[in-house]
Amino acid sequence: MNSATTLRSIALDHPATIPVFERFQLDYCCGGNRSLGDTCAARGLSPDVVLAALAEAVNYEPVVEDHTQASAAQLIRYIVETHHAFIRSELPRLQAMAERVASKHGPLHPEAALIYRNLAQLAAELFAHLNKEERILFPYIESLERSRNENSAPPSSCFGSVESPIRQMVHEHEGAADLLEQLRAATQGFTPWPGACPTTGGLYYGLNAFEADLHRHVHLENNLLFPRAIAIEEQLLAAR
Ligand SMILES: [Fe+2]
Ligand SMILES: [Fe+2]
Image (cartoon, rainbow, N blue to C red; front, side, top):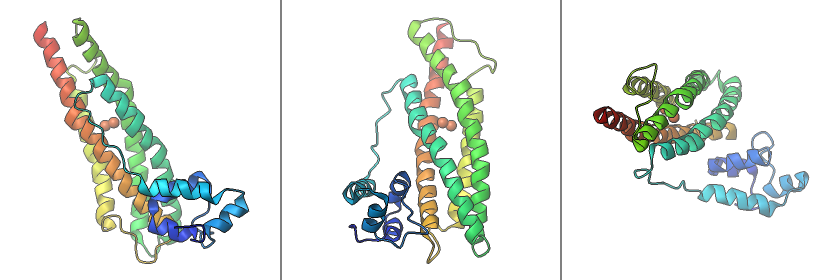
């Protein structure tokens, strides 16, 4: 990739660069046949700065952190700041792309309409889910941990044991994973159809990354945070 490469071919060969194009507001889709150098010149941008950001996006490898020693409160902060923030910024972006792809390619590619529908349902369900975690379950888990650390009485709740909202959250995780799984199956593992435009390529790439992030997110909750919350509650009850 250099300043003579067209934006379209950069976006097709390296879909990880699409967020960079969006950040600099460079049209990689309809106007994507222009070279990076020409586009930057027209926009008054330094091609070197844009090339550096593109190269960084291509080489980006997510850092895998070890959370096994984190407190519940630290884990919650990480989940909210990383994964909840990602869903809130990424899902509307994917929905907007899906709307464009469905309206343009829906007649020939029925999976485009399915993506649009499933993302709308996913957004409705996931945004409510994040709010329930952030407003009810997570603060309760933090107060359980605080009571355990301070040796004080367990906090009161309207739902009895913490296991009850946890069961509901786990159930909702399965619903979200199912919606993405349907899309994965309908798109042969998020593989764009031959000759697909860069927006479709970017959407499929984004869906794949979104699903991977959701898997890491759910893993931290189902397999680390929730069992820890249940164990803390049991410790507190045993100490009474
Ligand atoms: Fe969450
Ligand atoms: Fe969750």
